[in-house]
Length: 293
Image 1: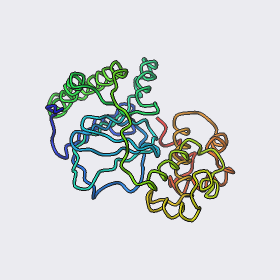
Image 2: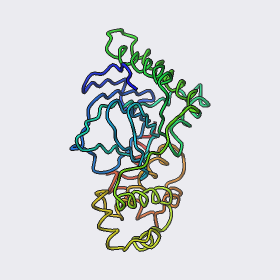
Image 3: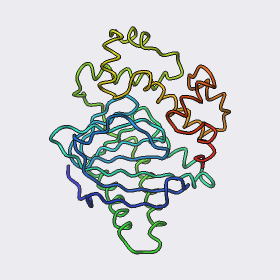
Image 4: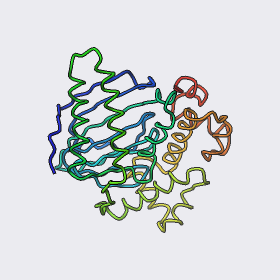
């Protein structure tokens, strides 16, 4: 299934910056096996990833999803993810990042409905040819508008972004994606299974011995393979996961810091402050003060 997608290698365009309640960013480009990200990362804004050419795997909070051409990944803020590209298979992709917090003022219910596209267990979408043609036409219009010299183009881009989200929202029940078998090794699959468990149970008292026993693997082998595959030690991975959840709660809720400490599984406020500073390079209070929209 081929679509006439407008494409310009390494083309990027921004509407405002990522601290603005209205932020949009386009990023077209080719990615290769040689520049695979070594670990999962997250953003404080929404992201839509569209694979235009090739095949890849998207890893979302430890779960692996195979992606074919014209599959979408819809990512909420603070969702740990990375794309894994395969050797010898260059992939073209479009990443559409945005924040539409400005809609909260007058259309909070719309924001809540749009979020259901992202905040779901399997936020990967695959549509038939006719539906994809309709979706691609909106994406192409956004591309053409961004290239224009019209003084109102950022306003037009905003309206087309909302049209895009509204269309996918209407088509969501026609999603044809199913979890294809992954082609990872058995130990790699085991490690991703463990990372998925960590993301779901980060508030629990996790330890190397506990996870090794739960997943029927020796502690020494687990420790060595976990570092080899994720590029994190097990302890650091758990800390990163907890801190990223804490960052989400600091920005999206008005919970007290001491409440967030308990929710995220830290043993004490002092431990939380120490680990948070190490990873985020600032205190939890400063993070909330300078990043909360």
